[in-house]
Image (cartoon, rainbow, N blue to C red; front, side, top):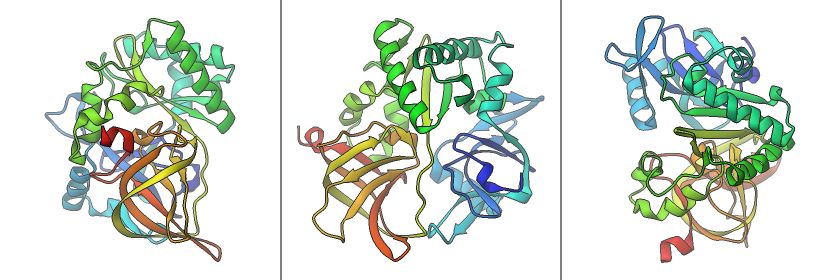
Amino acid sequence: MSDPNHFQEGDYIETSEGLYFTVKGMFHPEDKVLSVLRYIPDEGGDRVKNTSRYKRVYNLVKTKRFLEKNYPHYLSYIPRLGITTQSVPISNIKKIYKPREKLKEIIDTSNQKPIKILRKLVYSLNEESEVPLECFGITGSILIDMHTPDSDVDINVYGFEQSKRVYDALKKLRLDSNWLKPYTKKTVKNVLESRWSNTGLDLKLFLEIETNKVLHGRVEDRDYFIRLIKPINIPDKSEPIEVVKIRKTIKDDSEGIFTPCKYMLEISSDNEPIELLSYRGKFTEQVKKGELIEARGTLEKVWEGNKIAYRLVLGRKGDYLLPVRLLDE
């Protein structure tokens, strides 16, 4: 438990106060784990664990305010990132929940409805992709035993090549089966609202993108979301500069299916951002190679040895990424 580098995207942390955080990314400082608050004790909450009730929280602005008021030690300045963000000190960790360990524990031992559907999806992806079961994990509410009969199915896949094979298998399964489907105009409404309502843009602009994404959709009677996890390079130092809006052409989208996701940009000078980066799953599969895009995010200066470059980081309130063709229609 003492090594923050043992933590990966999708792990969950239970703190000494009974808060539950989900781990973000694979870089962590020496004494804390970068993570986001997801469940808090609440007598009126609709989630139950060991006779205690909990409430799910998701909005980053609201969770930050909650922590500032009640648990300020879970907000820390991270020098290497140049920002103050949510994190859990190692000394405050009560328990760690690992997606791969949980999947192995429950996949053949539970007949609860969400787990039966999870079993069907994982075994189908395993068979179609020939990726070992050891590369799959279960995250979200099922990981921490706070699920309900109607809970979504959240799966992690670990490894670069393994993730690409699962992605291709998922596309094939959606074409060949009637139990695994893309979102429709009707079923995607909640996703549009939760992901993009704070951008100030018409939600219809995002409809085509969200209904075409492979990594989320409907499995039988509920939503699914799959994260493809691979290591990413962390620069020696980064420094936020300002929130900006840019229009650029996508040079490379090959890492746009992963979490964190990255899109390389075509540039004409060294002072322009060379990439778009997001730790938020909602930006995966968002744009394609060759598309002229518009994005709003935080411009950052990054250092790698003696080299300096710029990137645009997406994920704060109001950030978005869209092909210009949708904005100009």
